[in-house]
Image (cartoon, rainbow, N blue to C red; front, side, top):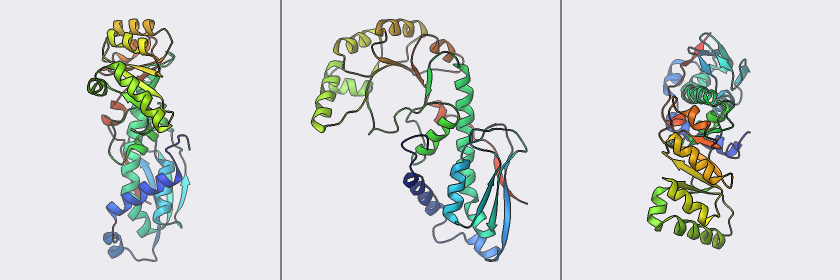
Length: 285
């Protein structure tokens, strides 16, 4: 496993919940049409070009549906694929293959699309020193797989959820009465809780950056919707005291210029919320 959220228990819980949504009291199409004793085989056919993701998850789905199913993996997660490639073959009880089919495809198509888009964006900032981050702009109950796909595509995961990092965004700051108050209250809260969590503060202008520098006690400063010239000025102002993250309004056309300002991280919500799934199918043979 490559990330702390990718636990066997978490993945299995996701698969079971997804199967409950789809199968419930039985795959009646397969149970009705296919003899229980029938065995068959199928191949995962690539009908697109991009980065393959979800192979390891597919194996776990098939195994959850029927531990007797056998997979022959021909292409691993992260492989560059093109039309006509076969990622794996699955062999065993025909009813089981058909029951698992749609969940495998739904996950792999979505994950492969995310991995493909992530790789294309990561290539745009290659050599700049900046790391590409995902966000919490994910599909409910599918975040684990979407963030996994970002890793496969060469990106870096930001916080997984609200629980594993403090991020004081504009609304937090405004509700708290200002940056100083928000940071002070956060330290008091964490001390009372006995927790050590990294603290990131979102800033909207250079004045707010100066306020964070004056108060201190944070790990990262987010520079939200800063134009490239202001980003460069903010990075120089921060002077390496804290990590920096550029966010908001970043496009494929502007991301290289953003990376060259010297920011440590660039977060792009579009990695998980605005991309096209890869076309895959499971075909009997």
